[in-house]
Image (cartoon, rainbow, N blue to C red; front, top):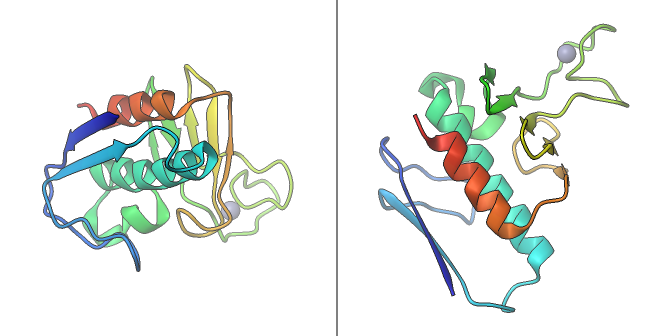
Length: 140
Ligand SMILES: [Zn+2]
């Protein structure tokens, strides 16, 4: 059994059709073996991306839906882009830059238009690593 607590400073919001966060605290309890690790990892990454974007974005830009332009020594985040300019690294068909990169572990996340849609996660990380990464990116 693992428990993860992360305090969200902003008021609760609906994070998509079947995922409502109605409290100020997110608690993820993982009974060992109850959920395939791959699904869990992908769910956690999606939730994490939304929380990180929300923390570092402006509410009116819907960061929890699209992501946010943000870069520091820990991670880089950039929304999917629709500009279709040849030189744009965020809307290419191939070799698109990741929408999220955790610099230390090399965890990369791509999504199509919205966080969670056609999401690709690459990097040699465990569920616990992902939890640590999310916590690190949510710290001030
Ligand atoms: Zn673009």
